[in-house]
Image (tube, rainbow, N blue to C red; front, top):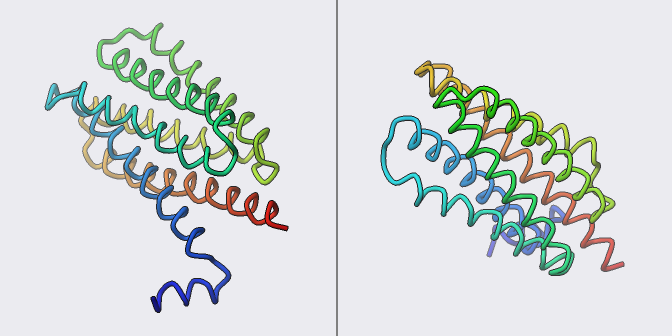
Length: 191
């Protein structure tokens, strides 16, 4: 109760803080599951299909949060873009692992085109999100994810750990930008 009162004194409602925590958790979980999936494929460990299924659930959870604010029709396009992103990632990892470089380059190109589409989509549904800022955040995440995959494949363990630290920071930056835009949108709707 004291913590909630302190947050309200700072201008953050309990609902806003809950949204921030939920988004930060989901994006952190996405980073961990992505890495688990990559390692599962590369090292042939565990159940990569089970990890992929759990990874595919993250966009559904993000959609549920977005639907609460912007409406269900808005979230339908979002889920398609987020699931495409996961699919392109899976293609990239498999292509890198098996040396299918032409397919890998095509998949990376589609991965970035999808980031462009996500950035545009986010900017269209919320005036408090900037398309260029979304592109910047998503491009940084994609680049670090590809670099992390390269480090895992080449068994550069120090680089792998450093890249994963960057991925977690990237994921939290995305979550914070998501939450900031949603909170600004919600505040404007209440006026």
